Every structure is written in C-alpha cells, then in structure tokens.
Image 1 (tube, one colour):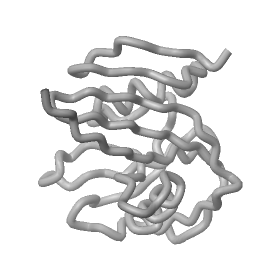
Image 2 (image 1 turned 30 degrees about the horizontal axis):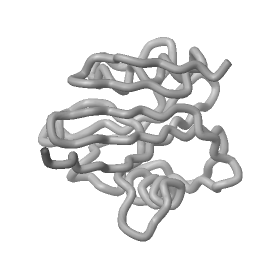
Image 3 (image 1 turned 45 degrees about the horizontal axis):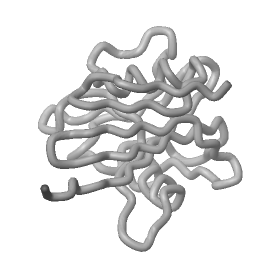
Length: 151
C-alpha cells in the first residue's frame, strides 16, 4: 500500500470588529470565498509560509508574535492528506488588495454572523469550530469524524 502524499497548509483568520477577511476566488479557480494562506514550501515553517502567503495574496503583513494557533484540521482525501493549521490575529498592516488577480478577484471584510454562501463547507465548519473552541478536527471524505475541544 502506497503512503499518502502529505501537505501542510496554513490559513489566517483575520478578525476586525465582527468581520473576517476573505479572498474571493476568480471564477476559473472556483469562485468561492477563502481564507488567506497556502502550502508550506520546502525549507520553511508553517508560520513562515503563512506570513509569505498573506503578503503574496493580499498584501497583508502579520508578525509572528501576534499569531495564535487556533485550529488544526486533518483532512484525509483519497490519496492525499492535508494538515491545515489555522492561525488567528487581529493585528496587521498593509494595503489590502489582491496581488494575485489570476487567482483572487477581490479581498474584503465580511460579517462573521453573515458569511457568504459561496464558501466551502470545510472553511465554514472550521470557522464555526474555532468560535466554539474546538482545537482539532478530522475530516475523511468531507465528513467530520473527530472534534477535540480546547477545554
């Protein structure tokens, strides 16, 4: 049996006054709303990847001392495993713009109590778990099988 390919991915939960920052994908890339972040590359840590991806995608600058790990998702796909680390901050600076217009057509703030419909079930679920204090979850074939709370 072949071992699955494992990818480590980071995502940023950036909150401000009851709103959350989301990227709007282009239609070619799915057209959904997503959190900033991406895959960890060779010779970089998850936090380094998050800082790099936020700058590359939306011109967001975040500092490591302001980041807090708030959720870890183990997502089992057919031949691949994603370990997704979600970090939160309320402190940032930058120009807030889509710097990758072929991937994201917009960057903007959205009310936490009225998230866009065109958001993946996984992202919506993770945001809900984060607000409930669930630190870890496992998803196999898009079905949650385990949640572990922080308390």
